[in-house]
Image 1: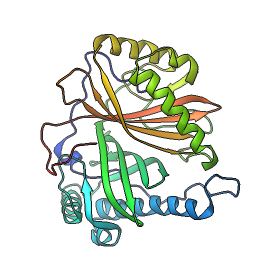
Image 2: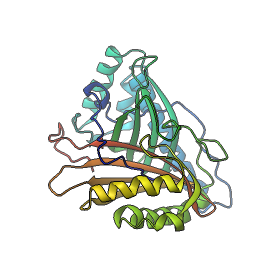
Image 3: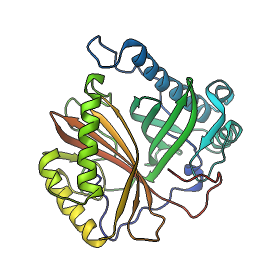
Length: 310
């Protein structure tokens, strides 16, 4: 689960250069899961979701890795809304950042781990590496589409630490099958519903008994500050809830596809704090949450675009 952090652990803001990626988790081209006749989504809906993934891939890969910003003109709306606090609204700002990043870091690579799409939203989970040989950043990007083009963007970025208390990295898939591809879309609705119930009970209501109901005992944790398993989540979250008894968590949006469900939330440890923007990504199998990844970023005091991170 979110396995938030130990009571004393605070997430540092990503560097300006890294944060200014505006949608930074770009994706290499890859095929999405095929749509079968038995899926709740018809072929038309499945094709639209796959199109959204492809567009996100193409825009971000070409613009940020290759420095070709002409793709922005084709696939980003003129009224593009930006929620990354260090970037301005509009496609011209996106083009300027992409060109500047490519010039400063010509060897930038996006190692995309998983991409999901539901309705008009796409979530991309990536390891962004600006300099070869560095650990880089974990990134979660959320894109909203309108009429086939990118209309809005939110993201969270977190530096990848040198070690993890659970022995897992922030990106790999441990539960089987070991793939970053989402499962069949016929599972989307039920898994979405399960994760919302689980998240609200455990994180919003701070009820640790939710772990017995919704989590598998052998649950795999990728938050570097929390131990593996349901027991590790119980210990880590219990300490977190005790340290911050006035913790308030509000869900902003949920995106699901197959066995993967992403929850974008605002965590505020104590009244008056700006809090953190968090994207939790859960994998569900057999009615239980079996794996979790997350990316956390402190909400800054100011924003270049006048929008919130949510």
